[in-house]
Image 1 (cartoon, one colour):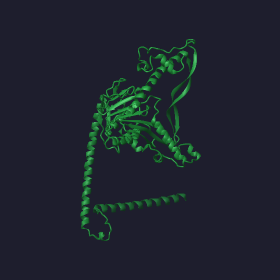
Image 2 (spheres, one colour):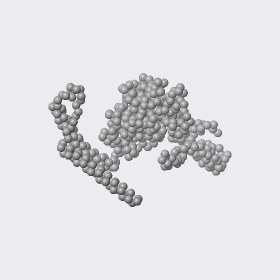
Image 3 (cartoon, one colour):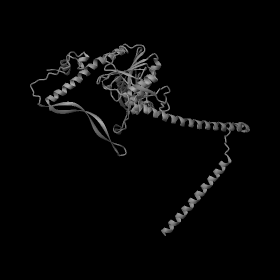
Image 4 (cartoon, helix red, strand yellow):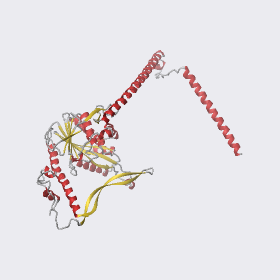
Amino acid sequence: MTGSVDDCVKHITCSVDHKLCMYRQCISCCSKQMAFAEDVAEDTDVCWWAWVNKSEQRVRRQADGTETEFTVRITSKVKQMGSLASLKEQFTQEIKQYCIHKYNIIPQHTELKNLRANLKSNECVILVDFSENYSTKYSTEIQSVHFGASRSQVTLHTGVYYTSCGKESFCTISSNLRHDPAAIWAHMRPILTKIKYKYPDITVVHFISDSPSSQYRCVKNLYLMKTLMHQEYGFQHVTWNYTEAGHGKGPADGIGGVLKRTADEVVNAGNDIPDAATLYHSLQKKTCVDLYMVTDADIANIDAIIPTAKTLNALKFPGIMQVHQIRSTARDFSLQHRILSCFCSDLCDFFQPKVVWANVNVSKINDSDKSVSDVSDTRQVAFIATTKKGAAKCRKNEKVKGRAQKSSNVARKVKSRKAKCRSDRQSKQKSSDRRRPLLAERHDVEPKMTIRKPVWWQKRQQLMSGLQCLFIMIIQKFYLIALIYHKMTRL
């Protein structure tokens, strides 16, 4: 008889501190099973409660009256029924997953804590997390504001970066509610720019975050990490470290709570916070946290760097949900990943590191194909797998680029001809101005520039005006005839 789940773990393992035992790979204890009481028959019907994830189809009504279906993910507590044998089998499978989860918590937390405590002069740790969106508020509100879409939301991306000199907290604010990888790196850009300017000797950056699959733990985020951290900011080594699921709370969450509580105090003092810009200016006067504004254009700039879906599909990353550390270097495009984080050395083989994206060709994208505003030094690259389809696609792109180059050459020639004609007209105008008397200068009047039209142009204008008058007269005649006919038919 056991008193808790931890007692069950101790019962089926040799030691809770050994990785092989907790991952059920130990030769001695991998075959150990839970000992259940035998006083109840296996085929007895029993019922139990379980948390179940399921998808549900819902309908959203648009403003124009149309309806669109969308899928939502729901976690609910469901009462299940079955035999005692099925309940035992389900518990045995879940206790194995719990053993892995329990072991990952302590080593990962300890390694990340030691990293922050023993930073070198060329290292920096950035801990980031999205805070819950802040709902805008007014000091006095009517009842209608509480309902509908009257109350807008503001995105808060909070974090702390640690260096050997100390630590600083930051928060980026945006009216854009996107939390995807493009938005993440738009929020990270002002922080990385400040770190690069303030600490130019830093060459190694360690990211720490929780692990939602739609934000930090996905291929698109890793692609942007490779592109921006090495190509744009010039860092030599980058690691991304994920906390164990359900154990990602940290300083970033505290910063978000402090800022939202400070904003509520501003509202309670009689001020209104109707949008993100007002929240930014209100918090600047009340907190020592570094604040930055992120606009829709900043996120659009990151969207322009992301390649097409076909290119991203070539970047396979099997088992990404079980990975807790990803290493990247500026030497090549490959990534090294391992089950848990380790920072002892670059050549460390602890936790059996593996390599992905090693057999991927890297080709530079022409700046004219994907232009990113306000980013002059960004090197945009696309990654295409070494396959026959990829080679055929490259040849096709070369032909398209050749045709585009020819058309651009023609356009350049036309543009040069127009510029030459314009310069000739200006030179003629200047020569005619020099022959004019200086009467306008005596009266402090700026001379008017007049361009004499050719004779054929004047005759053309006269002919067009005459035809226009003739057309108007014909329309008037037809209108009178129609009006007279209408009156006669009524009589």
